[in-house]
Length: 174
Image (cartoon, rainbow, N blue to C red; front, top):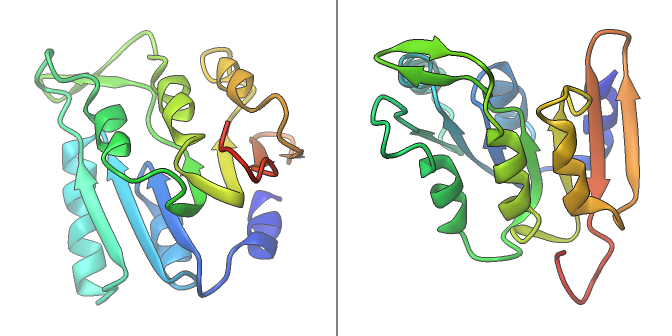
């Protein structure tokens, strides 16, 4: 299972960027130095923020990405760009690929994970990891093009497919 492999790469000094807040936010926050998380469902992000506050998890920063504004569909990508290159030890890409219009999920799924992956490859430290959940989905698989030279570990449990990509290119992040 993916969580078993996650256990081998995460440690108390890890600085994590998480795209898609939820159960993994809590799991990671108990194991890392700091986690910055963003979610594109404003209602869910508020719920997670409230739970984080109740659990007193000071290492977590939760940001919401509001897709109710049709002119602001790139704000998750733009938020990632605000971080300096080579900031994170681990980047976990598990954000919702559905956009929200007037509080409702819209179909078909977007290429949000692909666009985030393109930017994230610059934000991970040498020897750091980019983890993409559900990477075999048709609208997520193109994200792998940005990591062709990176060693990978694929974990498939029969339902979910997660790929762990390690940045071994010390001189650059792409």
